[in-house]
Image 1: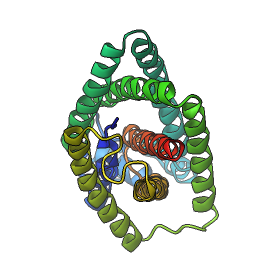
Image 2: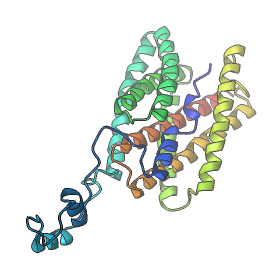
Image 3: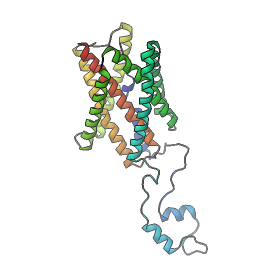
Image 4: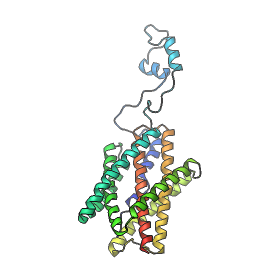
Amino acid sequence: MTITEELMAANPAFNRLEQDARSGYAAFRDGTTPAAPQGPTAYTQQAYPQQSYGQPGAPVGQDHLEHMYNAPSATPVQAGRVTMDDVIMKTLGLFAIVLAFGAAGWFAAATNPGLGFMLWMGGMIGTLILGLVIAFKKTLSVPLILGYAALEGLFVGAVSQFFETMYGGIVAQAVLATLATFAGMFAAYKFGLIKVTDKFRRIVTMMIFGYAIFAVVNFIFAMVTNTAFGFGGSGTVGILISLFAVGLASVSLALDFDSVDRAIATGAPQKYSWLLAHGIIVTLVWLYIEFLRLIARLRSE
């Protein structure tokens, strides 16, 4: 028995956001008009570029100017920028889609194993293709992100049902381990126990790419040889491979948290919250799948 490893590639969603941040989000195009500049200077220079105060017909009086200077600055929401609330709500929304379609995939696989296998393979290929499109498409497409979550849910549901049939209770164990790891990594990041520097990010990204290449080779090897987990099987080597994968997925969460903070700090456009939420869900599902594999290997001993 093997499962897809397509979620183990370095998160291209965050790589794209990093590139756009360095260019001042000049590459961001969503068909919307940028938020109007705030403050009296922007008002007088853009709305009435050829007029100055004191000329006949000038629209801005002294009282009006003082009022504008004393007015509070626009909030991130008013300015159309990413906020933590945006990211949290969209992450929860995508998570709900994954759960809903995951339940559908689970019951479909339980009642019809053949259909379940089709959902497994179809979800694996579909999410891989859709993920690349989302990462490299010039415009950010929310429908594609929602579609990805639906496909991912069908895949996760079908795979989970298969694991549960083979190892009763394994899904609950993997879910608990995933949630506990997420909470632990979030706390470690927020309290400064894990610091994401540029060097740290480069090292982890290279490790993820390396593991992704190994995962593809391992998947092919497992299919050709009809072995349960590919290289290492359920022995010591296989368990060590799974432990490494779980650790790598866990550390990737710190990169995700840091990317959210960077997006907020650099004033990323609000629509980027969809991309950030998408990236977090991708990492969470990867971590869950790796926990399934690790626990299955341990219980196969």
